[in-house]
Length: 440
Picture: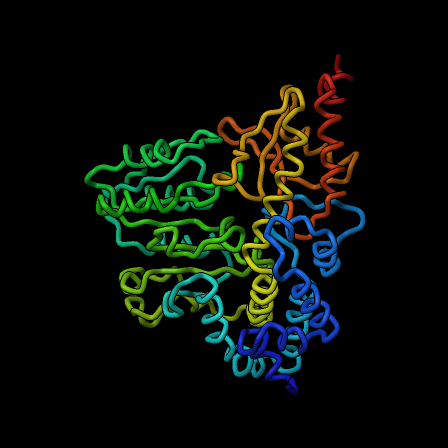
């Protein structure tokens, strides 16, 4: 197939097959990718998860720093080179005639992209809006709901700060009531977690807000069980899927959500500042858009996309990220992420003074784990790993959690994790941080 500029743009949005798309960007890459995937055909998930030849090839398709081991992919993930290249080509084209190429060419790819994302999420295209991140999507719901004074919302102290603050703002402005629950970290009992939410619901409860995978620790919450319970009690359900989408196998309807939002620049490895918002079709009309719309009570999901000028170049490159993700396959990707988490946590589990704030059980975790050490603050552990081993993590201090969040990705190598284990082993053997010793 011959790819002119318009075909390239449509391909990045999702109008052609994965390998046709990759051929449009880099024919050599497309051939290598097809050869690697064909080699894995018939291999068990366990076998493919530990196949270093394949995952080292995946690693080679990221532009990684040679001076840093990045283990904070939960914050934001890098993009594969093909996604970067699609973004750059779109960006360069836009600069040849911005108003023409952005509005008349690139914008025409949104519907193909919407359909592609909807297929990935297991929802109707008419239920999905393309936006910039989870915060924008969830704020659209939180501030768009018709709630009145005295209405109650059940949420957790382990929800994401931006969401907690959005609800606090509605509480101050509209005099709704926020009912907080605390989920001990880790908690490995579905019935007990569901009961925490159920006990907080009263006849005045309108909304139950659930974080599918907790940002601080990586613990997976039994989202569907909570949602089903909440629906039986007449409540609507908002799901924050920032860390779960494209991370482990599930579709949005599997969560039981009436409303759902995620950031595509996390586990999908799409361009920075890309996300999606899902609203059940029959509920779209009743949600006010966060930004002004000509028809705010419309049943059209596109009323949530009236953002003015934005980066069409990055938006259209989302489709390339979907293709990269789909070609690897979510089951194979999940298996690799679990393999990496288990690789380092099993070695650390025997160390003295270590404190896991995360479940290690597959049902309650995937790639993310949070670890601390007695006598050390999270910041001290993070600083020690960065200064001595050039390992980038993030310190988490929230409620009773005091540790670093370790988040590998599909490109993370075993040697990276061996370095992490070496650094954490050294910390476990020390009496305390070096600064404390000097003070003594």
